[in-house]
Length: 321
Image (cartoon, rainbow, N blue to C red; front, top):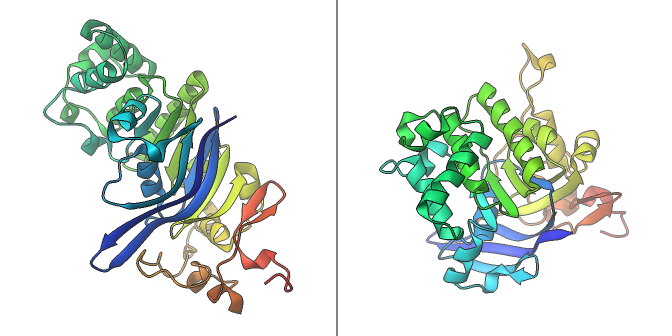
């Protein structure tokens, strides 16, 4: 069953340099108990997609539809959105060290979230929070509950942030690169914990990352974003076995591998274009190794191939172009 449906979502910002098309007409579905990974380079629109779904983007131009079950989120008032945000749809932010208020203990911040969304008193809220800290394997949970964020490591704060997201047993969790600021060993621990908790609580997850190793370990489906658009959708096994879009292929080739030792690492030439000056046609064509004349002229439509979909002229016959 589909729990979140996004259709033709656009999030634009007016600036002195022009209109920033941060998210430019994307569509996808998230099913119950599914982990969907959004991947792509920095600047492709992944985080703005998440913030738009959460209703945290202000002073922007919106178009499209965001449906949570049968509820159209784009039609909600700020007060109505607050009842959904944090209770039914939670978010784990990218920087754990910057996401907590340094003036309050982590326990105070967890209790505030609990009292806002659950009908419990302060004593019951404290008990719920400490139990959740134990579930995310925080040692000496009662002691840590009364400590301040600066007294903890990045890995521990990330676990506490996961605990906060799970306090209300939400239907959807959006995780915005939750392991980026952590070292490799802590990353592995957090990912293992994340998978265990997702299986326990049966929560649907949108996992934003540019680490394809994380995608292989965690996700069920993968959507590849580039320059504000989704260019490929596939199941994780199909994506790694047979990437369709040249951008996806280039991302996979850019992973660090043992056989690259002592040799120059492969990379994608160029950079993601500015969101005020996207090229005409396919937005990846200035960096693509398989570019054709039509790529710079017309934007490719989405085409279905088996269980995947891709927006690329390589998969259209000459009479369809």
